[in-house]
Length: 157
Image (cartoon, rainbow, N blue to C red; front, side, top):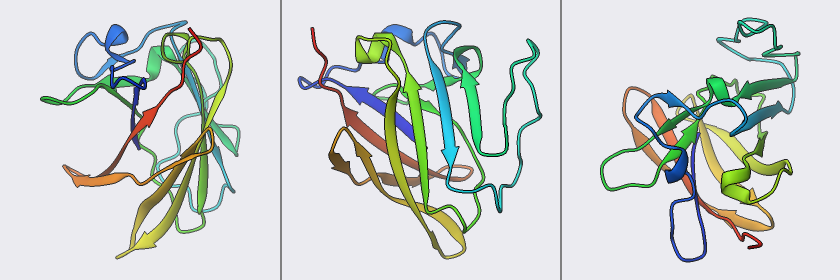
């Protein structure tokens, strides 16, 4: 799942964190949790800990600190954060919980709900909900199917 975050004027809120493709956002700039509906059918589960000893997967939640969270930018597009996760047909809903002060202008954990179904034997994201707003992600095929959504953030500035 690739997510870009823009303000109401269309400004890319991840741009200030972008260095180069496949770089990590960096310590203290972001933390991401991916909460699974259940732990059945998880393929390619991550090892138990990061080099600093932080737990990656506790059986229900993947944790990705900023040091391991990628930020990408494609030609003429907004920056995106993404985390590849192979999920099975049992996962109909995944929660992405993100702390990113430079995007949200606060230190709170923000929840992004994603809804999935199997389509032609592959997981397909058909809906994203953030702060009561519903989005339909676009789907592209690079090496794998990639789902992308532009999320509008109402920042209190």
